[in-house]
Length: 99
Length: 416
Image (spheres, helix red, strand yellow):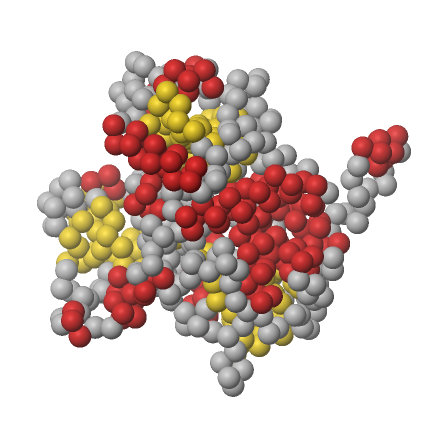
């Protein structure tokens, strides 16, 4: 089970959180002006990154707030968590491989 | 290829089994191929086999970054069924099931297909309605599936506890043609049969780039074992499909999750069928070795780690212990994870891509093993004809743009 650091509440077990998928996907300001392919890109297409991934989490069974995180999907280690509206911190250097 | 038969087995047994030869060559990459399949699991090996056997492609290679069958083919719970709700899905999965029924004969390799029946349990009024709807839809599509009362379910699977539990069993759907097969044998059988037709199976060969010509079509793959030219590439890389497709800048509607399974210590034959419960979330069958094979759920987050949280397996075990109290004191021997590529509608993609010469078979999520022969057969057709077979024509990437989802996610309400 992951230990996740909520920017508001501190480190809590994974069970308190809900994963919200890829972060920084902005909904179109004028939905009527967006074509089918752009809608499909927004709704369905994902980077599915192998490596450092920016993603949303919600502290569902805690403060209830959304926040973003950088996590390495090759080892599940969190590099940073940050509040909504903040830019992603520069990705930390790759963690050393386990011996 | 040394053909297997009762006579050949007897003859070699009398010879002390000293005259067996390796079942496929350890091939080194050639400079060019007619088609290259990326990914040496059951789907990829099967695709290469059908390309050679049915479409007469002479030079085909399968590139595998590790060893064949070491990914999801060797990590699943081997359940085979075809009782999906929608017409498109029923046609696709039943095509696979029909191929399963004769696969051992086709490949001259015993894949140990065992149609012992797959029973899906209903625990709530909603489950009963959903499952009965599936039964009716399946029968309209010519796919066998029948409704059992709780008592009939108990008779079909005596270890099942139908009464004194938090979510009592209210009934079940039974697909008698469903069952299990030996997952490793599927990879090995396809590898052996493909190799006999001249397919090169190249292990420890990871694709690191895809080159395109001035028209945008694929012309070569860059690998850890050098550059290989080819006009056709079929990507069959399961959880790593997004990684391969990123090499040509194609984004797909996929997210990769760890899916876990575990096996118990072996016991004598005690469990006659496959039981699935979507509501309390457990999948269980017994292998011929005697181990209980138990499927757990996916983790909540995307990952490429091939391991998952222990609480996910524990949850499945709690459900198993409640449904089958006789297993409460069994110990688990091993657990592991595989990386599954999940689409938003939980239906796969077997299709051409925007890049000429590049084809993709992905998005099988948590249920790709059951489709192995069908997916491979249809993917080979798609690559050979540069257009989809009628059965896989609906399973495009563009369905997400055009709104023609095949929403088995909503139909099952859980991973399946």
